Length: 123
Image 1 (cartoon, rainbow, N blue to C red):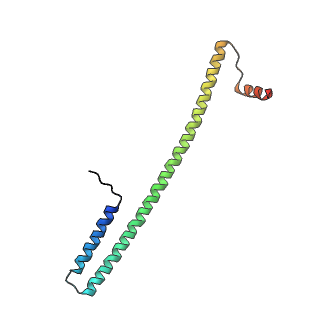
Image 2: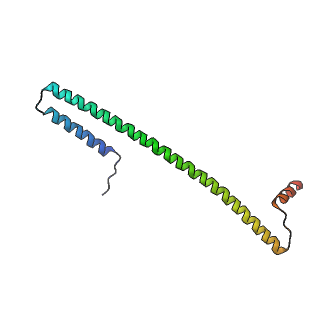
Image 3: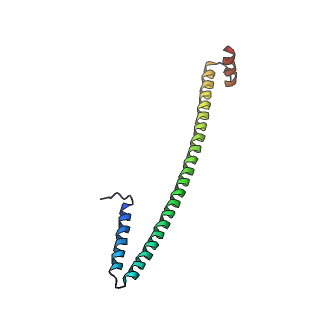
């Protein structure tokens, strides 16, 4: 059975490990001030380790964001290029069909530019 893992399991594991280490130090055969110093030192080491892990995670997140953004930009450019090519192909196909229809009817077809100029002069 799959479990949802949103990172809270790791946090609980780390918290349990820290508590276990603290209890082990409290029961260790050494004077109180040495135990407190060892706990303080261990807490500082863990804080630094967690801070480093957090910085590394943020850096990986930024890298992944930038990579994803680059891929999205590239996909967008390819889409626009494809859209332009499709429009050109559509127009060429339409012109070809018009030429074929006029050829079958025996008519001379005006070019697209001439047709546009004729419609503007009619207005």
